[in-house]
Image (cartoon, rainbow, N blue to C red; front, side):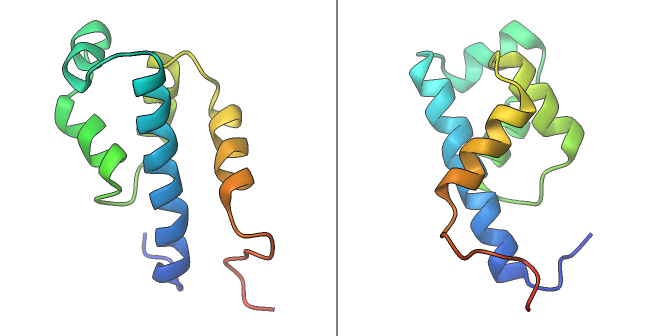
Amino acid sequence: MQHANTKKSGIIFQILAKELRKERERQQKSIRLLAYEFDIQMSLISRLENGVNEPKLISIWTLCEALDITPSELMKRIENNLPEDFSLIEK
């Protein structure tokens, strides 16, 4: 699904990518190790961490479980890194 404002949604995806990578690195796990431990495709982890395409909720949820964080914690981290007046909806 394409968002009306792809530039703004891209900001969210880039923050998501940064937060996922940061958490994985904080746990000192390589993409290869995380993929192996939890039977997740390395390409999926890489695509999410590089913000290559719009992630599916199930992919985000799976990676959150593998990293032992809740999806709501990840969303809060993303929200905290957005510009203060950020909105996808033009008002």
